Length: 228
Image (cartoon, rainbow, N blue to C red; front, side, top):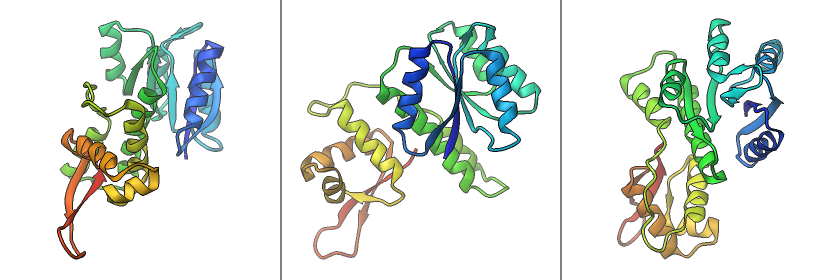
């Protein structure tokens, strides 16, 4: 489980972020605080027991800026990962956020699908990091960096819906095995034709690897594996 600290001074927003996290398999809310001081205190306290892995960090806090919190964390030797969740769109803030090691920058307001997508890319990064040996190859590094890059939002082909696409992406991301259109259709209650259309779209946009599956009579069946 990825233990996550929610740092947000707006109670309704904090509750929404925690609720979103609880809907994504593999994450748990370790604590929620509303100030910069509270964030630093919670992170330091967690080191003695169960360290926090990820911080969802608002940039505008009552007692400090999120960038300053990130700098203080690095200065204290805390290598926790940070996702900025903020309404701040100033490009200088974005640039500084990247320079202090913030791995994702999520601009308010956003939908659950967008939130789940960004957290999913981070989760894939962690999976790759945990599965890599102590000495990384160039391919390992390229894969970890690529996993943090969310796909560019583009209009969906006619007939495809964003909620269904996100459900399929989440399902594939959680499954370590390659799936055929028939298998995905059965698991999610879709028609085989519909499942294949979504799988082809994800493969065409570089999110899935597509390859023939041999070993059965007749024409080889295509199978799809999550790449990000």
